[in-house]
Length: 115
Image 1: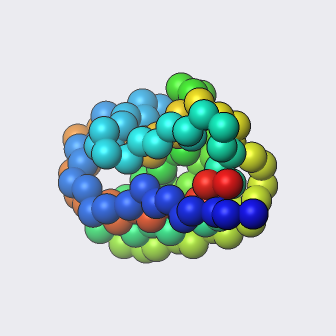
Image 2 (image 1 turned 90 degrees about the vertical axis):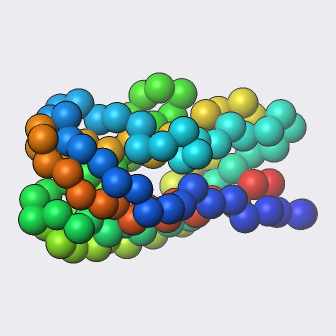
């Protein structure tokens, strides 16, 4: 069975809109599973430059799928190891939430494999 790794990754500046208001970090941090394929999330890594807790939300078709809290000036690594399949035409996006007015930089790296 052939598989292709796919990544949503980058270093992105942000300004918080409130912890209850996640926002799309960047349109480049979105992926749609091609028709006839499935994708399996493998891991999430993230880093936070600020002195406050922030979090990244993996959104699936506009709904929260997983939350990844990242502490103040900390990093996180979460192995997902095929928690569930993402079916054809599923859209995933990386959103972030931070306290209102907080600005900083997030490093994000979400890996999956397309089958």
